[in-house]
Image 1 (cartoon, rainbow, N blue to C red):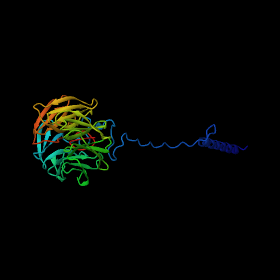
Image 2: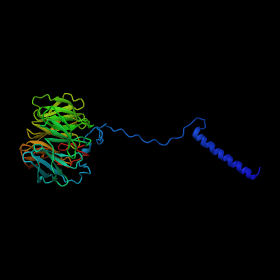
Image 3: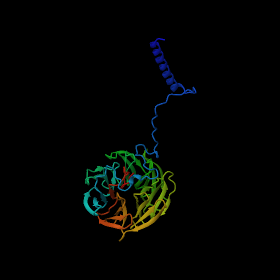
Image 4: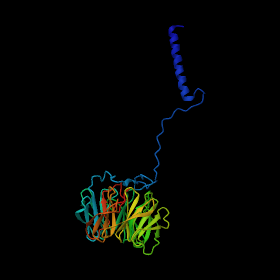
Length: 394
């Protein structure tokens, strides 16, 4: 054969071999079995959240601990540069005393509206709202500068909360017998939910944010409210004559709600999901405020009628210690310092504020303020967003 013909035959044979090899890869292996072409790697499916939370709510960090974002000094970038202060609303002086927690000194006194009840951090952490109940206004404080802004007209703002998705502010209109859902920035009324109980005042939200439990101080009742529907879905009367429920806090695992009762002298413990008959735990006379430790293991319970603080252990489900204020006092509302080392409480009937060491229960300071100090706010505190009151953070 001519050399050129030999060369062409060899090239043709090589081409056929390559085509055969490619065909085997697409259609079958050595055993002749049919095979599909290897597909491109599939996109990884989105991981389902551990908790099916209220739409728009930041994801739950730990389904076993709603307070996982509140660890010592874990400040949001939003508040990291804010000066540490204690803001004390004086209900009978119509002022807010501002305390430097490092020196235990009052460094400023702010004039606000009539009968300020609570100082409330906004959902986005940028503003502190003073609830001027009888003045029918909310006064904003810039926590970066400590200066007040122009007050906003809001009727009967005894207390203030925010839905976990940040969509609404919820005004506890105590005497109006209403839950008023408002724009969280302008405070424009969006929806009003009338209630049949009397004295709505405190609340806390479920682990998934889909409902919240509200205390009714003057009729001794509890409400369960659907967050998205903005509707009361259940109601019950506490099984104690003359019950006077106050502060509300959910357990770290989100399974139980604790409700302080000033007349029963202890806490009611209710399953939020079933909203069944509550159990009762005695703490002390005038049980009033509830504050969770930075490690989520304990809760500090202020007993306003006897000048004590009960230390409640969540795991043991019992009071493990009682701290007594020297010279007595009327410990009311407050909060825990950012590092978790100091519990700050207002002395409602003594025109003073108490700073208490959370490691020993020792009183660190007793500071004179205006008349009728009530819902003081320690700010800033750890957390990604605020649910309201004097600082309920998630």
